[in-house]
Amino acid sequence: MNKGEWRTQALHNTAVRRDYYSVTVPKGRTDLSPDEMEKWLGQIESESAQILTNKIDRQKSLGKDERLILGLFIATLRMRNPFTRERIGEFISKIGEQIAAMIYHRSIKDADYFRQMTEKLQRDTGEDFSDMTPEVLNPTKYDVKADDEYVMGLSFTHVLKIARILATMQWVVYRAPDGARFLSCDNPYFEINPLSRSFYDRAGLFNPNIEVTLPLSSTQFLFISHQKTKGGMYRLATPQQWKTLNYRVFLSMRDFIVTHSRDFTPNEQQLLEWINRVAKAPSSNHR
Image (cartoon, rainbow, N blue to C red):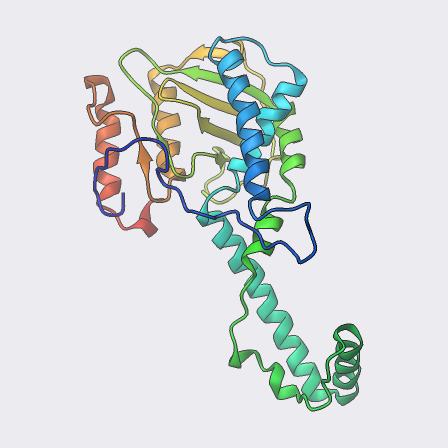
């Protein structure tokens, strides 16, 4: 979208970063592998795919365990994009910078504090810090950046709790109207509080007004909220619901809009207008 270019290719390896979830295995650990996280995510994907195929595609009701598995899959999608990881990394880095500055300033003013700190470092690491001076701690002389593996671990820390919350909410699977389809993107999970004037005012999944949307395919779109509505779990989207759900794809996307065809029907002209408009806008102005 940033370049306004169409690309036609197989779905496999589209918008993929290699080794994005690779981890460093500590020496002596034979029970772990660098792709341990990828294996875990792959297992969730496999189990979820079966439920999507056997239940969602056939418009059957979901059991408690099935909702929890799909909830876990959705919760991982919440974290599985570079934008989220970078945002969390930047947040942690800023905290690290503030802590480093506090330690530095106190070390300059309080010699006893600095001495006790270096003594503890020496006990913990076995290294000699007797020649270290407070100036070594000056944060202006180095960059404080969160470790990628730490950020990745932190990103997925609460996915099970999120999955449990999602599983207890109200789920609706909308079917696209005839002659229309749903789009997807590189950041398909989306949360919004439609009653707030601020796009960023969401207040988390416990907000009674929060809505979660996720395209499942070109014909199905998942809508999750705390509000009970009539009509059952599987419904045909009205033209306005179809527009709203697709528009949220544009709000959540970072770099890519995904569609199974470049040919747009007369009923889909709104989608083409949005694509042409957003593709010409700078990435920072997508919202």
